Image (cartoon, rainbow, N blue to C red; front, side, top):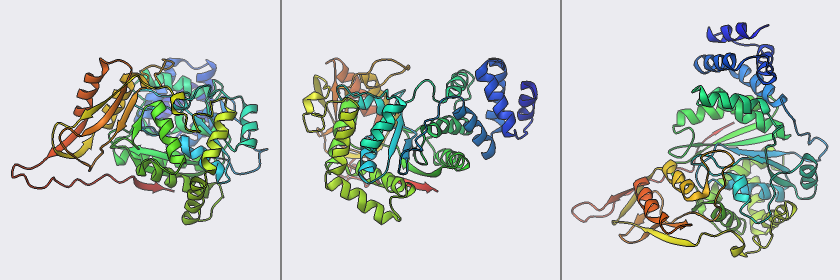
Length: 443
C-alpha cells in the first residue's frame, strides 16, 4: 500500500477501504506522506465524494489519532449536543445543566468564536474565574458530583483533524460535506458519550445556508455516528434570524440564566426544550417526547436546572454570584444606545451573518484563533421577523466599548434588517410569516 495508489484510486472515483484511509491519514499525521500528496487526496475526495463507510473510517482514524476520553466507569448514559453554529446560539449554556438536573450525564466539549459565530467557551469565560481547561480527571470528578461539564478540546484530541483542516483551508476544500462531517464527528466521538443530538443550522447565519446543504450535512453526521455505535439524531433549526434576544458573551450568559429561571425569549426556550427532549430520550431517561418535555419543564420550574448551573459554575472556578443575580459581576460595555427604526413597518428579513459580523466587529468575536474577545459588547434584539415597528421605535440596542462604534454599528444593522413600510394608500402593514424554529428531524 502506498500514497500514490490511494490518491489514484480516489481520483478515479474508487471507494477506499478503511485500511487504505487509515494508512493515508496516519501517514499524513506521522510525516511519511507529504503535504502535497495530502492536498491531492483532499481535492480528489472533495470532487469524488466519500460514501458513508469512507466517512466513518476517516472519522474513526482521526479520532484514534489522539486521546479518547474513557467515561465507561461512570454510571449513567452520557449524552451531548453539537451545534453547527450561529448568532445568539447559546443553548448549550442551558442544556448541560438542564439535562443533568433531569438525570443524564453531560460531558460537553465546546469551541470558541470564529468569524460571525459565537463560541460557548468564550461565553462561559465572561463569568469571572470560569475555567474551561479541565483535565480528564477533573472532568470525571465533576460528572460524578455535578452531572455536567462544559470544557474545551485539548491539543491531544483528534490532532489529525487539526492537520487536515489546515490543509483544507488553503486548498479550497473546506466546504465538502463529507470532510466537514468527519471533522466535527472526530472530536465528538473522542469525548466518551454514547448519544449525540446535532443542531444543524440553516439560513442566512448558518454555515450551510440552504435546506439541501443542511440536510445533507445532518444525514452525513448521523450516518457517521451510527456506524461508530452512537445513538444519533439531528435537528435542522432556523438561522435566518438570531436565536433569542441577545448576541454577545455577557448578554448571552444573562439570557441563559433568565431561561433557567423560567423566563427568557420564547424561541430560545422552545429550541432548548426541543433539543433537550431528544437528548433525554437518547440518554434513556425518558420513553416519549411528552414524558421528556414534562421532566425538562419540571427541572426549569422547580429551580433544579438553575441549581445545576450554579454547581457547574462553582466546580469550574466561576463566581456564583453571577448566577444568584449579581449582574454587575459580568463584564459590561460602558455604552448602550438604541438603533431606532427609520419608518413604520414590519421586519421582513434579517441577514444573520452580517449581524454576527457586526457583533464580532464590536469585539465579541475573533477573526483569527487566539485573539482576545470583549465579553461586555453585543446586541439586544427588540424586533425580529414578523414584528411590526413604528418610526423611532427601537429595533435593537448596541452595547459598545467606544462611543465612535455606534454609528457604524447602526448603519450595518439597518443594512442587515429589511423593513416593509405601509402601502401608499396608508392601509394596514403587510403580514410577514415568521420562519419556523425547527424544519426537520433526521433520525
